[in-house]
Length: 112
Length: 242
Ligand code: HEM
Ligand code: SF4
Ligand code: SF4
Ligand code: FES
Image (tube, rainbow over all chains, first blue to last red; front, top):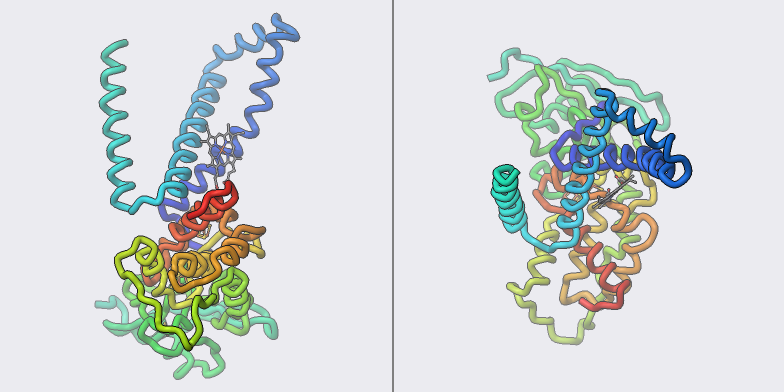
């Protein structure tokens, strides 16, 4: 029998695992490219010109997205497991964070 | 209310002594009908060899849980109208447990882990002492109260993907029991509880995916109980006391 399990917390778990694995696969590549700065600067420049390609740009966007998803997902888990708060307290805390994020990014966008 | 006067019910048959295979029955549809009613109708009217388990029929005993359309549920209190997929239901034995036959799962591993998690009473007094007074509003008591309505149905155990992937994992119900006792003023051995839940397969194996809390029919919250054990074991590890 096919198991049905697509409730929000399970989807969050899946997203966290996939983004974590994605990051783990990407990081060695990332450090390898960075290491060229000391071993072979010309090659680094050559690799960096690749970042002009739309495909690479899209991939970079994906990575930043993965990191953001994993970072907020990880903070969510840490809060869930380490703060002995009640469900309404957590809802209020999340609402407060979302609200302040909205206000602060609005100011930031006006500043630039 | 039913569009047709029959339901199409697919039941998983077989076990260690016979191959697993689905078998489909046409069962009369009624306005008020639980999944357990449907399974009983098949056993009483279509095939007396169908094996399944129930006792109280009112959500007290925890013996009737099965997989219903991919979700573990207490069948005696699950209305067919709530779970119908078109006009069909698929019923199978609980996931993550060995099958005895047809719809009856072997609950032994579930109860063995209950004991392995020190889900047993460690008395503070003997029968000759006066009964200990309990403060009903104490924080600890409220934590303990949150988990005491567990009926040992194993729905959470079947819902948990960590159990599916790690045979040593004690599982949500046993860990929730451990947390309940840990917060019980009448329990004398908190260290034994923390020892039992901090090893391999203990509370730190839980990934907080919350299927236990999402599907517990009694609306209990093993996810939060396990988080409590994570904090208590970590505090003890770093030398803190509760
Ligand atoms: C940005 C800060 C980060 C935070 C706050 C964070 C947080 C966490 C947490 C709390 C878990 C446990 C999840 C669970 O119990 O299921 C986890 C799992 C994991 N993290 Fe991260 N992490 C971060 C960065 C990274 C990075 C850079 C990588 C890549 C190397 C990574 C790879 C993983 C992997 C593979 C898992 C296992 C996934 C799982 O168990 O489901 N994390 N992370
Ligand atoms: S929260 Fe923990 S115990 Fe509950 S389903 Fe997820 S892994 Fe299993
Ligand atoms: S915690 Fe809920 S789902 Fe799990 S055994 Fe107890 S009553 Fe059943
Ligand atoms: S038969 Fe007792 S809980 Fe369903």
